[in-house]
Image (cartoon, rainbow, N blue to C red; front, top):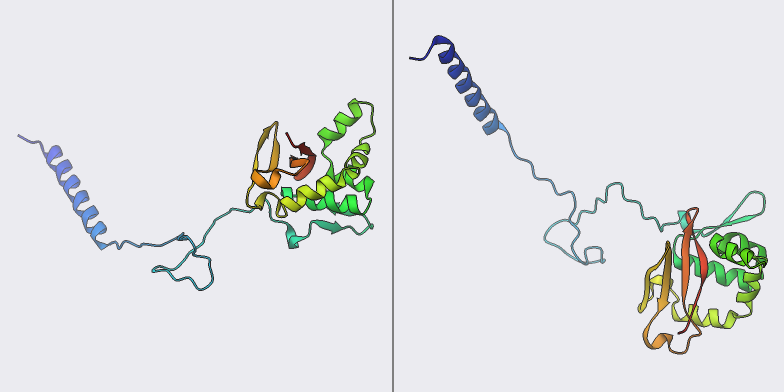
Length: 200
């Protein structure tokens, strides 16, 4: 025999199940597309059976530079060089060498690691500018072979150890180069020049 308490518990349980079934049957399911980005979906004039939705959430491109300005003029007349990509470093190396901006190159383009290496050999780190200026033609040839930096077809960016990234020209494009690549490293939020990679 089932006691009155047990009967009451069974009755309450059955009522709860019935209520949940009724509530569930009254709910409608909503389907919402939060991201649909098919290949070639961003190409102007392309068509898709579904609406293209690009919701990247909180993602921020770390290579994006405000107003696309990699040289910022400061109120005191100085400039700040911004370099978020290897290509930005290329631009700064080229411009400082062409404009004979030895101090700016040493302070804002050359990596601290390379400066420390020069100092450890008893040399002024600014000597690095003079060393590269003497090889400007080789640097220019390298930059001509990778005009878009790491975004140039046939150019690869890979880890070279200890946080250094190597941007290197490969294949036939590298055959006549004296420098085949450039090493960069992130320091204080900006890419800096570690050094150039000689041909093997």
